[in-house]
Length: 240
Image (cartoon, rainbow, N blue to C red; front, side):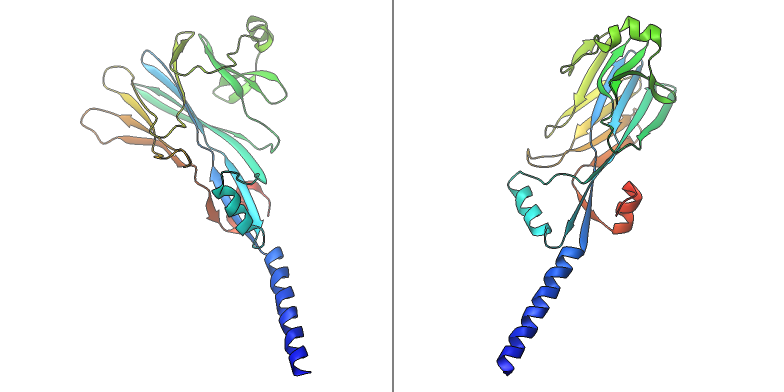
């Protein structure tokens, strides 16, 4: 009888432990990492990833997620929040702007292409848009006509090419990727991926270089997912 009671207690404890493992969650955030550098003469634009991807698992699910990641099959994200940091650099000024897309279903601007009068892309809903001081705005009727509704946007890679007068360097996702671009006579921009292994998450930094001065950090983001509290997760996405 005593043995049966102990067995029953053990089963109850195990059931409670499994129930708790299925109820309590762990939370992870992964910062979006990306850099595209457009330079022309004495100015440059940097379009940089600034959003987040969110993962949450029960304690029961978490071990399986780690195993999947080890075999290069990471689990799907539960939440995404897209943001874009745009930095305009000239010898006399440094301007920053965050373009924050609060729509979870938004995919962000695609096929971004430089033209003589600015940067155009295809925004959510297949809408041709243009970068302005207020962020990406729908293109005017005249701009849509001139760009043939977006058909003049470059669909493929522009890396290390001259496009409409702009030198393009994009991605910086391979380990050790590095570029240094002069802006005027006494200014340069250095972009580097500090990852050292193909399996590692990208870690991209952007520094402003001036002769005889310490480099000024403009961007330094490691894309490796990090564990966060439930409150930090909620702050990032508004969801638990």
